[in-house]
Length: 255
Image (cartoon, rainbow, N blue to C red; front, side, top):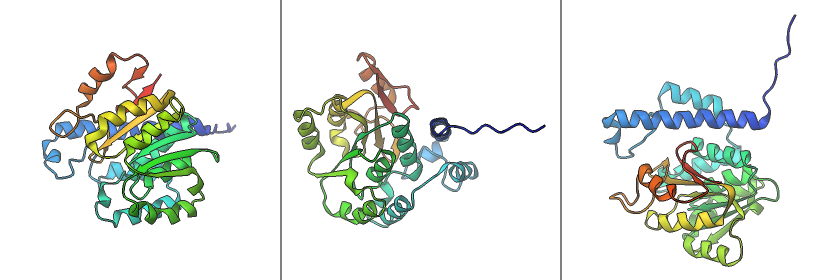
């Protein structure tokens, strides 16, 4: 007698996919610490090499990249400094987190061509909104046709000015505590200021992710590289009620 195979619900499937990618990030971090030769590479990748069989297997089984998002990633990689963009697996993990917390409003600091903004927009409901900040008007215009192709342009609120000005305007406009998620991939000199303002703008249960040197992790000003380590960040957040730094080792979950 055969028994019907139960199917995973969408939230459970997203959670499992995020857990698998999170485990891959953790594995890469561990291997990076155990293998000094990796750190000597210019990119200082914490993840296994892109041609690693295990990593390729994980990507082949977990990636669900929208066609417009894939085209935008390929276009971005052709641009100067395009190789510093968020990777497809990072974008999907953040998008899955946005879905899991049922995000409706997101902040994206550091638009470039809008790859991360589009990834977040695709994860939001039709009425969702991504406020994305950029100081250079040219790169977003490269991506705009693909925002339109994905039918997500109406969700992307591009602010062409320094990100701190936009964050201060949002706070002055009474939007504190109304954003569900914030992704910081902008200039590192102001990262501590972005951190503080994003925490004010996030709602209870919101998620803050900070990218640095191609990796999703905490980065706060103060060290030789322009940021503090995760242990330093624990000191910064441990005395503040309502903050957790344990979610997949790279996000702040605002309780």
